[in-house]
Length: 505
Image (cartoon, rainbow, N blue to C red; front, side, top):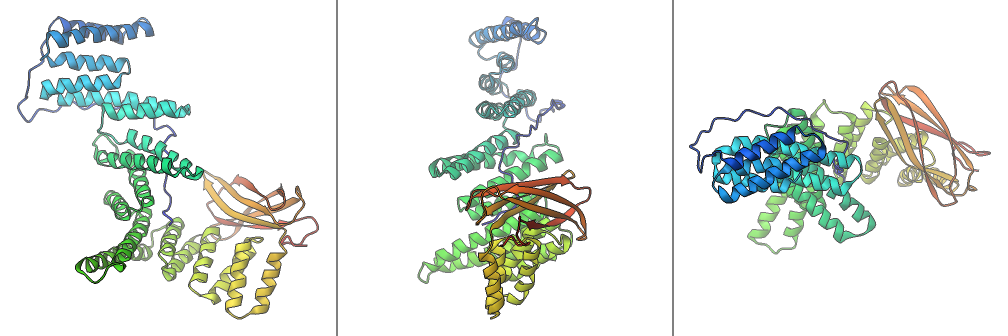
């Protein structure tokens, strides 16, 4: 299953927040409930120590004054147990010592005693949240993940009205799930995934906070909804995953990646319902499951039809639509989507290769010959690409052509695999893998990459020579260059000492 362009890692690039303007307390619409705050020697002493802590002679003096404030205000709890101001001030002193849990407890006590503290406490908690969140960012930047997680957790403890800390924390668990999965520790991966799901789901309601500006809301909405949906899909909770994408689409109507991803998970949800119905004898339950499955599939189809009818999508978008359609075996429309992506970026490697796979799967062998020839001309020395062309010839009963390609495939001494191109901020990076099929280790492998602009014209070349890995081994390759114009892709040429252009002897 492919769900496209999701960001799983925490946003640890450092979304360091500066202190935002705190809103003025709003007028209370309801009559205050509880005991009004009052003065007294404990309140007066607490305020004095807090003021001294804010203008300390040293860091040690600052901590001492905050602790003195806590000591006197704690005494105030006992002597004036119904005075909410003792609790309000104590919470501020605890924040000065970075004791966010005790601050939360003190402020809960203040609000329990006097309901009209709500607006003031909201502002105090928000300011404390900024302190805790920025500490999380700082430790994350220092790669102290456990400390970062601690402070992101504390940020949510002291103020649960913003999503950022939960999303950052969820990102760490998401990364843990990926690493555990790769290591084969499926139980640990599942536990980390469940934690990430709970955190992402818990963050979603607070995305509506008025404290979020539009740019921040969009940034964290994508992380929350998209990552939540992906993990739900991994747990095969496809309907819930679809709902996460559709919730996002309520905020950003028509966003193409969310639409494509929603269609993928809706299709899987439909398959679940129809598979369950298949196991049942005729009954109302079976009929209901069949109706549900068909309805879910219709919703998925609607998304794809809308996407393919639009003319405002990018090549990336059409490629993602094609990938989704390929996943649900809608080969005809998948081919259309990949073709449109190639119309926009004619030298896009991944779209050309996926188009070839779709044409093969759907039995369109005449078209496949044309596409597979192009694929092998542009990206030679790839066993999969050569197999696609050989199979197309075989299906068309052109046996001599098929055998010629298979012989060339068997004669390959070096294979170029897993090609990828990334272009960001004027720099293009092309990477891939060399697979040694029969060369002496260390043999020089010369590659020339031609960079193609969006009109398909060559706008630059990159020449690089790599050494062949050990026989039957693989090694990563990577080249980069400055790209002054947007690129639609690349082609490459390969040469070996004493070998022809295909790398055969």
